[in-house]
Image 1: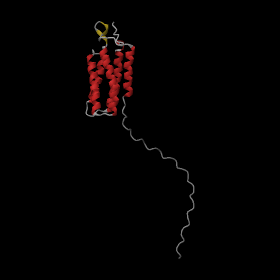
Image 2 (image 1 turned 90 degrees about the vertical axis):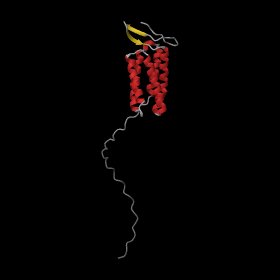
Image 3 (image 1 turned 180 degrees about the horizontal axis):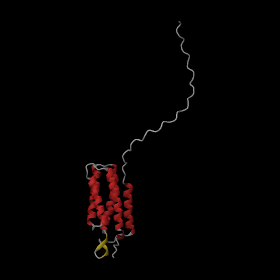
Length: 186
């Protein structure tokens, strides 16, 4: 078994740790791929909340470009179950973003699924890097999760009218009125 010591600035090539004859168990990204992943996550930390705050064409294009870059990066890695699922989610996010009017609620659901899959992906490559690098990846993921707004749901139906309240106490007697005018003589 071979360990990829990619801590700090060591130069590392992409390697495969195998568990048996020809069956890949862990696919390690290279240092440059790891740096690109970190850069993309940092950019998404800014771009995702910006798009939710102002879902205009410019912000949408920024997100589309970032997710396309992430998909390109994932396509460079050797296939794994975690990586393949992550690619499917990125493609679903891209499909939603490329629709004329992206549904922010649906996008939020896809992003939550993406974050979960990203955590699984990080766990699948945790043996590739120093613990500090692994911690950095999870810190970035935590920021992504905390900065992604969750749109409010639909307003619920109006509730039933409540029961009639108890009758209030009788009020105080009012002051005596002024004496009326004298009537006409008969």
